[in-house]
Length: 320
Image (cartoon, rainbow, N blue to C red; front, side, top):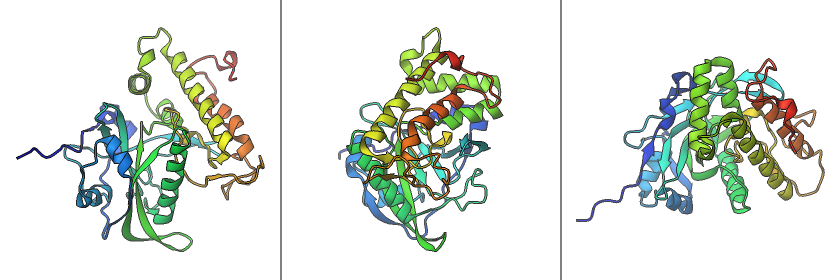
């Protein structure tokens, strides 16, 4: 008899970090889950192609976890519309990191998986329409050659979600090289110790930028790499008319991937003042403001909350 092919190769490196950076959290179970879409091409890349339909439904509805994993929600902070606040995964739970057959590491995250310690007043759930939207736009971005998180599965949970009206509940399985954000650094700098910050910076370098692991000035090199990835990302957005809509610092990924598809869109008629967030009254995150906001976010990434420089003398380092 042939051995059953192994699907999951899950690691949990993030739980080796200081415990203030996350909370252990199981997803809430879905009462009547149904598969709306399963991205089999992405499953093949991840080494999950031999999951059965029942397994897909169980794992990506939150009703079952891969053996040996420790699901968590990540803590982070951020500047939202210019104002600093404590945040965190209010409706997302990280299953773990899948190691692919090509030895690449990808976060597998359930978005809309229920309340977490960071949910505040939210219900932790997502609507089916919103997760379908993220699936469609993230896959469009991927096939346009733009770095992005991707969507592995869309599950209809069988729950009713109450917003401005009643919606069908949905759960998105999101895939990313990590979910570490500019806002994660803000959290560590403001709420953790200097030792925690040193551990976290080393983790980020080891995970994303091993080429600078032995650098004499790894902090400056890290900033330059993140900066250049963000510049390239915004250029890609601008060339296709993409408007993110809410470029808060917590929505800027350290890996240079597009993350957190909310009120986003592709602009059909050119107008640099176009916005896609109903609360963006001052057009802070308009299409034409995206390069300026990237500069602002990177300034925050380089500094402490009180303006003291954390990584480098920012005034002597010009963004092209």
